Image (cartoon, rainbow, N blue to C red):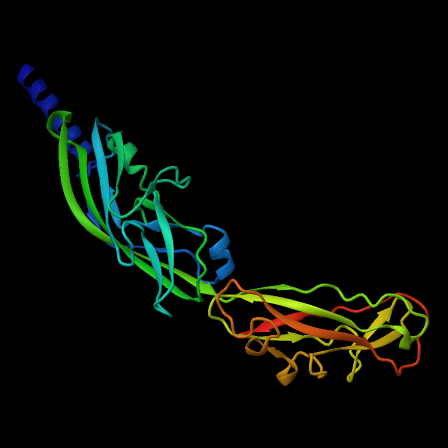
Length: 330
């Protein structure tokens, strides 16, 4: 009887160990390729003024036992190369022009408390494998890398790309015989393709036109002013001026709250209308100030004359307004 009881205990123990073993998975890491997009339609002025950021997939994924052991669990990456680097500074290259660069930094966490450049190493560690695997929280199950562009780059529109080469090493504490730590080590290489689409943009400065007060339509003096425009580096363009909200079909009009109309129009320096289409538009190559200068910094000026039509019948007294929209076509 005693022998049978012992055999039963051994059998039960063996069944328990077999059942438990089905929940174990050997610790391992694998390096493949990752990606990161900083956006596809980023204004060139946004690139200059503010950091653009993304969470890139690093290409490294690790698995391991569901049983947590105390031990040393470390994953380390060395940023071996940036295809478009200068020195240790990683950069995105405008593949459309082949000339412009946007520098960027690499971070371990979203706060970017520590910045890593080409040649730097980043280490993730935990005293438990489960704790380390919890850091693999990217959308594809990989370790995340946080990418931020640096401000101050005045660049042309285009598709910006870079490829990071990452060399990985790892040391994991897996569940071994007798519940002891079985050290698993390995290494691998991954690449991370980064991209950012930059689009043309402009900043316009257009002061209001104030004709003042007059008793008769022919008593309003002309108003001469300047529209100022600065656009993305390398971008030529035309500037159009809408016909306003009260267009008669032949002339612009201001409207009073009582429904009256006061006719006016806006003219280029050559006395032709400045309008919204065709030759009525203004070309950046023929700006009145800094024509054809496309460095992304220099402001181009467009002179105009706003004039109340002198020959019209004077409408009823009141405050007359209109709204003109300026538009840019590249």
